[in-house]
Amino acid sequence: MKINLISDTVTVPSAGMLQAMQNAQVGDDVFKEDPTVNALEEKVAKLFGMEAAMFFPSGTMANQTAIKVHTQPGEQLICDHFAHVYNYEGGGVSFNSGVSCRLITGNQGRITAQQIEEVINPTEFYHMPKTRLVCLENTTNKGGGAFYDFEEIRKIKTLCDKHQLGLHLDGARLWNALLETTEQPQDYGQTFDSISVCLSKGLGCPVGSVLLGSEAFIQQALRIRKVFGGGMRQAGYLAAAGIYAIDHQWEDMRQDHQKAKELAEILYSCDYVKKIEPVCTNIIIFSLLDSANELNFVEQMRQQDIHFMRLGKGKLRMVTHRDYTVEQHQVVLSTLKKMKL
Image (tube, rainbow, N blue to C red):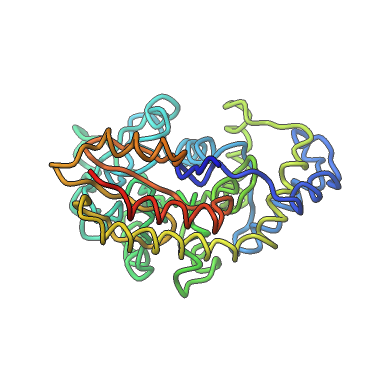
């Protein structure tokens, strides 16, 4: 029994999702004639209270499209040093948009309005790149699934308005944050200029992300998606999975959060564990004591067919998801308890 805790991207469609995909009505989305894609875009736009939305094959493409629309070559965006758009999108910020990143060391991937204000470049000082965009990530991937206090986001929005900066949210795991906070999707839609949300992580879809913004923003994004090669034909089969997931599988993610907290509790009790980042949603990042052998730990777990990720610099990551069953969970808990290093 293989137990895969490498990521929440490893899920496969549920039976209900497969049925919805099979029954989807489809057309050519490049001509905006796929009724199911159109329905998904309308559904997500309405959910967040934003004017328009666009279906993308990946979250990276959605983020990179947003950055391209917001910026011009030679300008600069501000983000945390853990940000996905900086670390895990293949250098696309510079490759696609000719934009540099001003990195901030925040708290588990979260930055504050005060930190942002300190690094906004003065517009009259032409020796420095023009600050144009702020990118936030919620929840944070490399930050261990942490989510923002929305009051801080509001402060950041006020700052961006003051300096005429765009505000983009990489909300790949925003669905997770919404289950743990009192904010509604419309609160985010009223605050951010653009938002990307992923369907293929905790929601359990096989493919896809959605980018949200104003009508004018999404019209520009349509051209950029075409340039990036993101036009899809009968994509309604994939969009149907997204509609089904939002309607039927979103609440299930609470179980992922609970399992993550239970894994953290066991790890806290293990004498070979040095540190565990605060567990807020479905990501557990931890490190072992210097005296413990990390490679030996990984190998012993692999012998039990339990797989997870090494992040480097002594950090290990486990991610819970809908295909991580109660039975598998008990095996992992028992294995961690019995481990000797």
